Image (cartoon, rainbow, N blue to C red; front, top):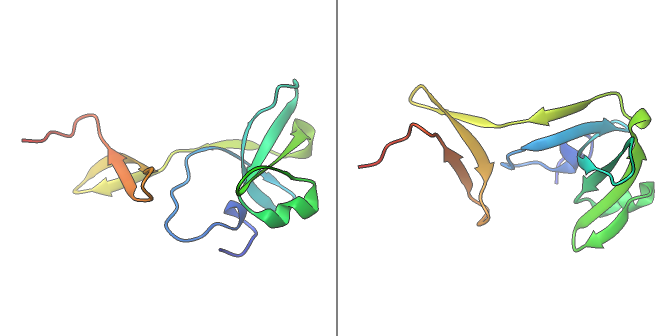
Length: 107
């Protein structure tokens, strides 16, 4: 699954969406921690347990770190362009890619 460096070792056709950061040279999704000034990194890579991540559920590993440990936080929104129109893109629950456009009309 990828080179293990960016996008947390994920490769293929996965569409990224949400809040991300770079921690120790690797890209992780994150959520705000209950503790002020901290975030919770989210990984799907079991090898991250070697770096202090703990397993929460099958294939979900987390680690709480201080905001001082990262250089920047960023938000990713993926889009697809089809016939000149931009559509928001995301992974569907069934593993397929979905797109949406509020001006899209069906007949």
